[in-house]
Image (cartoon, rainbow, N blue to C red; front, side, top):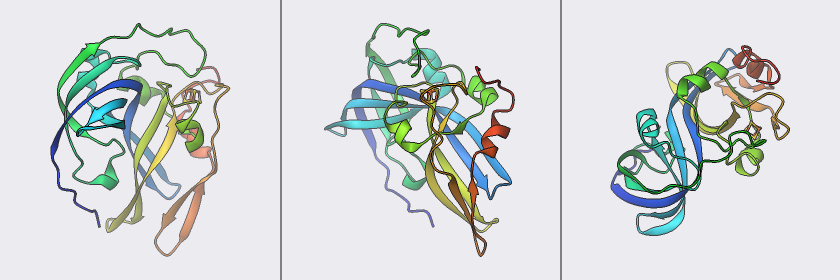
Length: 214
Ligand code: SF4
């Protein structure tokens, strides 16, 4: 059962700490791991709902294409709290009234990882595919990287009857990135069958179009 939150509209203003793709992932045992990018998560430090904190807002691809948000920009807008908190990693979505209050210098695109340059279009992420990324790496060294992603995951637990939900971190970056760590294999449960473990070979399938340096 999904808990249904009571939604309300909020105002926010903050400095960008990271911009990452936003995606929904569907898992079914080891037969399927489908990634669907839906926009971007903007991680901010600043005010939201009258409190100073770190938080994330989900924006669309069109909004990112219009504003070219990147790390260090100060932005403001309105957004809504979540209808279904389990389904969405970002704290707020349905963002409107976006403004860029001040713009930070564009980061060096050629700098070594983590890559902090402007995020590409979603079609680039879709083409590249991704590998599992250790949650500890996502939180620390990889957090500012445009190839890092915290996904909303739905696990088909009892086909057509029930799903389980969680968040998982992934990396769309070059396979030879020195900061990359897969982390532990991930359990994918199914009713009456226990769990099977995603140990990495689904990563190979998801990124089969790319070579080691891409
Ligand atoms: S491991 Fe992936 S997310 Fe982390 S810095 Fe390297 S490319 Fe970026």
